[in-house]
Amino acid sequence: MNLARSIACLAAFGALAAADACGAQYPERPVRVIVPFAPGGGTDITARLMAQKLTEAFGQMFVIDNRPGAGSMLGTEIAARATADGYTMLVVSPEFTINPSLQPKVPYDALRDFAPVMRVTYGQYILAVRPSVPAKTVKELVAHARSNPRALSYGSSGPGSANHLGGELFKSMAGIDMVHVPFKGSGPSTNAFLAGDVQVLFSSTTAIIGHVRSGRVRALAVTGPKRSAMAPEIPTVDEAGVPGFEVTGWYGMLVPWRVPAAAIQRLNAEANRVLPSLKDRFAELGSEIVGGTPQDFARFLANDAAKWAKVVKTSGARPE
Image 1 (spheres, rainbow, N blue to C red):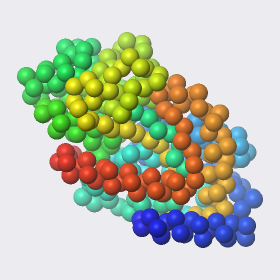
Image 2: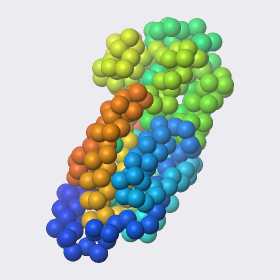
Image 3: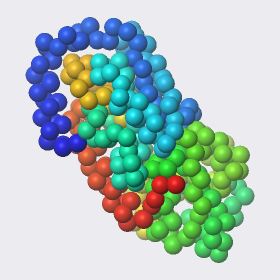
Image 4: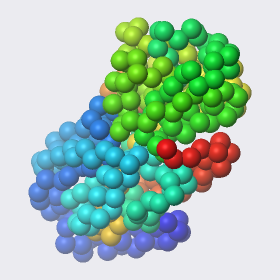
């Protein structure tokens, strides 16, 4: 999407909001919330928490519709082709801005076919290993992987996911080789990791922190620029042995392009109003609430797409 065009159009729509037919009455029936991943992952958990609060706020059901597949592109395409009436919403994560640079053919224009509603949360990923892996630090993991090329496999929530790109960037920067095993969402990848089908996982804090606390898996590092306030004992990948490494995650809400501005504004206003009530819950899951305007999210999406394009080029990552 041309960023100036997006912001200008949002502003123009805003000026017409008072006259928009779906204004004060929206929503008048249930809203479908498409999650382009399987149940159980970070995107799904975030969507369900927001859907519950929006259902309470509007008095209309916000119904989760999980549509995993093709590295999130299946569900995203369904949302892009949905009627632009405000009754279909899409909850997205970094895969949304990664796929345009990584995938050879994306069946929609990620930044042109959607209108931003709000960025919901920001969070880090955790680099975790199975107890069977003889490494208690990032340096030990790197040493083990160098001595045993392709002996380790790492799971991701699908080709083009942030944990896929995070793994490829880690391999490139650490000078190691691990086998990438993609799944249809972070829920299935987490389950496979817990079952021992893969030995390494770059997981959203939301999806893995409970298993780290229970001792089922070992956290080696967090992937952000600083330590997590909820687990300050876990070092960053940067300080633990791979200088300069940084990968962060986020979740946000979109609707199909041309949804009436009044509907977008109502969704944004109510989402911002209810979001603080979820602050503690998201903190438990390792995320910080963000909020803000549709214009804020439009700028963020444009910047994030540019960032991941650079990561794809630098790491040499390819779709599976």
